[in-house]
Image (tube, rainbow, N blue to C red):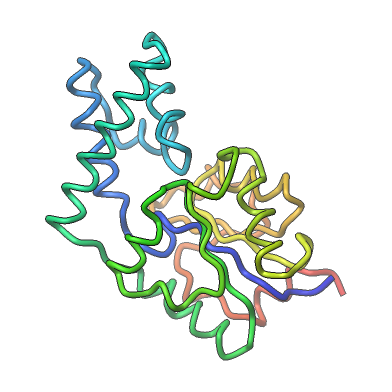
Length: 217
């Protein structure tokens, strides 16, 4: 197998939606009397479907109440997004452009159903061959479904893909899909991504050739 495609997680890897998500989660949880820190965000809700994130902090709620809480969080997120906008990560664009030059196929995935809207808001949606949103995948991370679907839509085998992730559950999901993994550590906490095949703190440290080295000759 050799490198033919790279699959990027969107939140925290390609676009900096993390501050918006954190603010929205914190506001929603505060209404239920829950103190919510950034560490809670990293460990309990980052990179997974909203309903699962709500359940992780509010396990005492019924499924119906969890759906309401998740919907409330989403409403707050959209309000913050429309008000504050969203920015891409320059280092991610550097790597993506390097992959384009090397004719490497590219996908972006997100558990968010607003993935396409966010990418368009950041004006980077046309940089990807395939976009997989929360509307497409049946099961969220750590299930591998979303990565396997991305590979299929790219027309590639799982073993020909590298996944770039910033969350532990995403690394686990990609591993279960039997894909090579790169952890991007933007918080100075590389140990939480130790299951990845490679960990970097800046995507400018990566190129097509460096990613290709992850594959045995």
